[in-house]
Structures are given as structure tokens and as C-alpha cells.
Amino acid sequence: MSIFERIISRGATAILTLLLAVFTGPETVGKYATVILAMTIHQALTDSVIRQVGVEAWNYSNGPAFVRRSAVISGISGVVIVASATGLVAASDFSWEILLKVLPLVLVPVVTANYLSILTKAQRTPTGWKAIAKAQGIASVVSLAVAVPLLPVIDIGAASLQLLIAETLFLFLISKHSSLGGDLENPAPLWRNYYLPTALSSVLGWSQSQLERLILVLLSSPSTVGIYSLAIAVARTASDAITSGLVNAIRSQIATERSVELRQFQLRRGIRIGVRVSLLMQFGITVACLFVLPLILDSSWSEALDVAPIFAVTGVFAAVIWVTSAYIISDGQSNRLITAQVVGIALSLLCGYLLNVSLMAGALMCIFRDVIGLILRLYIVKDSLDRKSIVAVVAFLAAAILLGIGSQIGFFAGSVS
Image 1: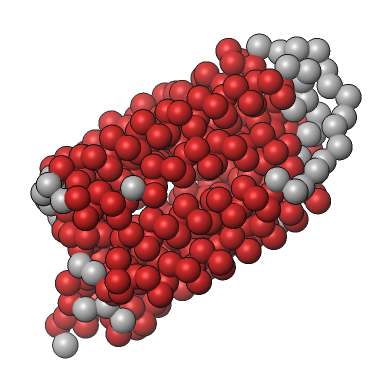
Image 2: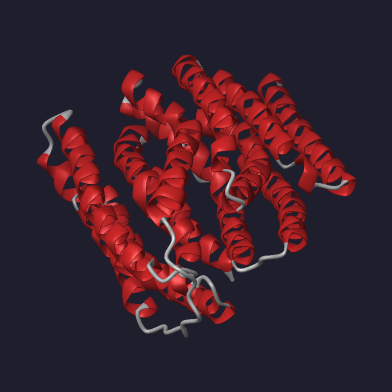
């Protein structure tokens, strides 16, 4: 159910991004992507941290108050961050039209903050995941039904409304879910032992995966940002949705499991599932970029379709990186991730610079960054893995790289002919 919930949520975003590319050009998509980037910064600092820590927090007597206070902080900080980005995008060409179109995104952090408490509690039970998936499905379908007809008229305004409508409707639906409380343990220093280490890990993780986009926004034109954003949306939406849902499920199972052996089993199981499914997604993305999407998008998006299969390789690596990171954090070893994340940040800076020079060169550097990040994380959890898991990781990642290389041979052959 966790995976289904993430597929629905991110799938709606991917559909809107693709349709936005059909009706507009790279520059418009780039401006919208810049505001969404600011939203991901907010999520890394507060929202996603609460989603992670909140599941564990309900084990302690001071957990409910902790979740409520942190949700308030999340809502306020989110409005400030997204509003600032919205103003900067509108000010770039003094466009009140752009400002009004992306203004609905400013309200999204307030809406999400209002359901974090019940969401984190619902994630602890199988019936909760069912309720989450159902609410997410209804919210996504309704919001798409409203936004898609408006795309030809107000373009990014429709995309902004879709996200706000989806989150608002999800808040309304999930608020009807109720879950029973259990016996709570003594109070724990949740801010010091859980929130701050997880927030640091989340920010470092965001920097590793999104810093190159921030560098690209600062160095390049909105058109280049738009081309990159579509390539990433095509390449990573499906695999990231599945991996994110898998990580949520694994994290919940680990948080409620006290046996070390069963925690390690969930890690190995998560890795094997993640690499298999994400490799399957990569194959589908490659086929779509070669044969389907060129029939839908005009020539202004050809560079995005050329580089998307290379970015799709990183989705397979992300499946292992995210699962192992979630395990390390849940095991109380967040501090051991810092070295891997600092190295990743340094390489992401280089990725951002190379993306400004050439999207293909930047994509290849992103693969190299993820290879290094994966090696460092696997070293941390090596005692929790068995030979079968290690062999599966190596085999599937090698297949992902070969598929990426094969896609480029296909593009080259097509250009020659």
C-alpha cells in the first residue's frame, strides 16, 4: 500500500509535467520547476523529517506533542521558503501573471502540516496504509480531473492548482482515519536523538540529490532548467515513487520491530525488491524515450529525451541508497552517513557545473556520484547483508549501466542513419 500511495502521488505530478511540456516550452517548465525545487528544500528541512521520525515518535509518551509542534514549524517555514521562491521567479521578468499562477503552491506546506500527525500514526498499521493509499488515489484523480482541462488555458497555474487540490483533498480524506493508541514508553529526547540527526541526514541527502539542480538554476537559463526537469521527471518519477513507497514500508516495519535479525531481513528484502523493480522501470523509460515520447513532444524537447535514459540509471542506484539509508537511520546510526553524504554533496556540485556545460556530461557524473555513495553506504551495513543480497545488487546495477549505455548506442545509430 505504501508503494501504491507513492505511485499515485508522483504519477500525477509526472502526468502534469509531461502535459505541461506538450502545451508550453522549456522556459515555462523551468520556472515552475524552480518553485518546486524550493518546495523540496522545505520538505528536506521539515516535512520529510517528520514523516520519518514521526513513525518512531509514537512509541514514546512525549511523541504526540512532538509531532504537533514540529508540524506547526513545518507549515510556517514552508510558506516562507516557497513564497520567497515564487517572488524570485516572478521578479525575474516582472511578471504578475507568473506570480498568480504559482501562488497556490505557497499554501501547500500549510495543508501538509495539518495532516502530518495523523499520517505518521496511520503509517504504523496495515489499515492505515490502506486508508492512505485510498485517500491519495481519490485526491490525485480528482485534482487531475480539475487541472488537466485548464492546462491549455493557464498552463503552470493548472499544475499549481493540481498540487494544492490534491493535498487539500488528501487532508480531508485522511482526517477520517482513526487508529488505536498503544502502550507508550517513557519520554525520549526526540528532538536531540531523532529529529536533529534525521534533519541533518535529510538536508545532506537533499543536497546530494538536488544540489545539482540548484546549481543549474543559478548558472543556466530557465529553458535549460526546463529541459533538465522534464528529463528527470521522465527518468525518475516511476522508480522514485516505488522506491519511496518501499522505503516508507521498510521504515515502518523496522520502527515497530525490536528483533535485530528481522530488521536485517527487512533491509535485505528491501534491497532485492528495490533493484528489481527499478531496473524494470528503467527498461520501460528507455523504450518510451526511444519510441513513444518523440511522437508526443516537439523537437525543443529532444535533448531531454536523449539524456533521460542515462538519468534513469541513477534511479536503480537510488533504490539501494535510499533503503540502506533508511535502515541506517532507523538503527540509530545517522552520524555514520555524514561522510557518504558530504562526499555526495561535493560530487553534486561538480554535477551541477557539468549539467550547465552539457546535460549528458552532467548525467554521467551523477551516475559516478551514486556509485561512490552506494559503496560508502554498503560498507556501513555490510554486517547486515548476506552474499545473496550483495550478488543481486552488483548484478542488477551492472545491468542498469549496460542498459543506459545501450540506449545511447541506439540514439547514436539513429542519428547516423
